[in-house]
Length: 476
Ligand code: ADP
Ligand code: MG
Ligand code: ZN
Image (cartoon, rainbow, N blue to C red):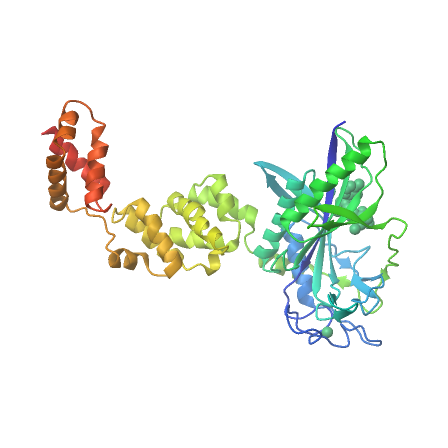
C-alpha cells in the first residue's frame, strides 16, 4: 500500500524587540547568566506584567505578511506546566483568542507552487534555559531568556513532503527577515520548529494518528526527522500496527526519533485568561498604520523583478531571497544598466565566492558600485569576461576597486591595432604551415593561431580584435 504524509508545523520565532515581552529587561542573547532579569520575568509573587506594544506590532506584521485576519480583540492566557526553567509555573500565551488567524503562504518545491494554510499566530513568553554540568550531577538555571517575546505560527496540516516542510520554514524565515522582526536563525534557536506528522493511504481523506517531533535545529534535521518518521510509521502500518499519538525527540547523532512522552502523560495545561492582562484591542487605525509601514514582501518583489527588469522567474526568485540581495542587485543595475548581466554575475560568480566563505552579501567587500565598475570594464572590452572573474575574486578578497586592480596588475586587454598587428605578423611568420592550411580552406586552424597570440600577450589581447586582424591578414 502507498501512503501519503500529512504534516503540520508549529514554528516559534523569537522577536528582536529592545525589551522583553512583559517587563523592561533588555532582550539580548549571550550575556552572563541571570544578569538580565527583574522580579517580573523571575516570576516573583505580586508583580504585574505589562504587554510590550512592539511585540503586538511585530506579530501583526507577520499576520499581514501571511495573509491572515486580525480580529479586533484577543486575549492572553496562562498555560500551566512545571519545569525548573519556568519560574512563574505558567507560560503567558494565547489560547481561544489569538492575535492573528486564518491565512496562508505560498511555497515552491521543484517549480510547483503550493498554498499552505496558516491556522493562527499567537504571542507568548519564552522560558529560561537549563545548563547541565557534564562533570557533576547538577543543573543550573539561566533566566536571561525568560520573557523573550515569541510568536508561534501554527500551520494547517497542508504539507505533504519533507521538502515542502523545509520550503515552508524557509518561507517563514524569509518573511520574518524581510519584516525585520527576527534573525530567524535556526542554529541559534531564534527560529524553532515542531513537526506533526501522520500517514494515510494515498487517495483517502481521513487523517491518521499523528506524532509530534521536537528538537530539530536545522532545515536538514527537520527534513531528515520527517523522512525517518515516514519510514517508521510506514513500517508499523504495513505490519498492521497502530500509530500511538505521542511526542518524539529527534536524535541528530543517531538519525532516529524516540518517544519522549505518550498520550497518557499528555499535558493538561489548564489554560485560562490571564487576569493580570487586559484583552488586547487592535484599532483599525493601528492596523492601517502598520500595513502602510510594511516593506515590499518577497512574492511581490519577485514579480516586480521579473516584470521591471525582464528577468526569468528563476533569477527573480534567487535575487529576492533576501532584501539585502535584492537591494544589492537594484543598486548595481542603477549603475550598470544591464539587468540580466548583473543577475548572472551575482547568481553565479558572486554567490559562488560567498558560498566558499559562508558569507552574506551584506558584509561582502564587493559593493554594488564595484561590481558595476567591473561589468563596465568587461563590457568595454578593457578586460575579458574570464579576467573579470579573476578580478572579482581579487576584489572579493582585497576589497579594492576593480579598476585599480586592473591598472595595478596591468590586466587591461591590448586593443591597440598596431600593437596587435605586429604580434599577428610575428605569429604568422612563425607558423607558415598553419597559414597555408588556412588559405587552403582549413579555417579551423584560426583558433590555434589566435591561441598563439594569446600566449604571446599572456591572455591580454582582445580576442575580437585579434580575430579581425587575422582574417584581414590571412585573406590577403
Ligand atoms: P495539538 O493540540 O496536539 O498540538 P493541534 O490540533 O493544535 O494539535 O495541531 C498542532 C499541529 O498539528 C498543527 O500544525 C496541525 O496542522 C497539525 N496536525 C493536526 N492534526 C494532524 C494530523 N492528523 N496529522 C498531521 N498533522 C496534524
Ligand atoms: Mg502541539
Ligand atoms: Zn524582566
